[in-house]
Length: 122
Length: 122
DNA sequence: AAGACACTTGAATAAATGCTCATATAACTA
DNA sequence: TAGTTATATGAGCATTTATTCAAGTGTCTT
Image (cartoon, helix red, strand yellow):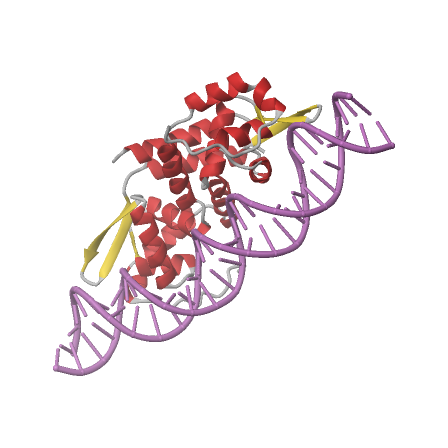
């Protein structure tokens, strides 16, 4: 009912495989969940953010330390930390002028590990 | 030696935290690995590709079936399947005119699951 | 051989993205 | 109070990217 009209041209396969397609459709998660999942992985899909996350997995760090570590401007790092915070991957605490960032939890590591397993298989 | 000159302005923190930054630097994986990891997650960072992968996790499907399932053009699906194949996430087999795609292995599911765990924690 | 069919591919376009630069904010220091 | 320091933010720009459109390839059918 809430589905928009399917304007895609159908082919013979669709008829032959109708049952399979319908079964898959029934098993697909909600659109929103898949969208959120894509949004999460999008955050991991940038080498600057990956390097920030990896660094923070080793130690809590302030913005300027991360900037020097990755040889990038403070501004660039700050922008990316904002993205990571919005994705609920990092948190921060303020100590005077200095803002220290750290990982929210250890999911990051587990997501990394799954990715590395795939990469390392040839 | 192969490091390019660090042109980023240093601050007091860098001096105070010098040891920590150096420790983190030593523990960071090779640039190339982190780059590959980002490239992999970039592939997961699109809802069309996520939906294709999820569908293929349920069943082997041909291009036109996926197109109808996701209500997108064959061309768009074909382009994305190419990306997924280059990332070594899907494989295909030809049966006459029809090309059937399927997952290369079950890593995809494990990567999804780790992502979902993060999403579901508030 | 001609046409239909399933799919691929390349160019074009609109949208999203990451970085830079300049400026703003907030906290410390002299 | 004025200046410095650490960080955040907004605008601008160059690059990347997802989709569309048009055309191409290979296979089957008649």
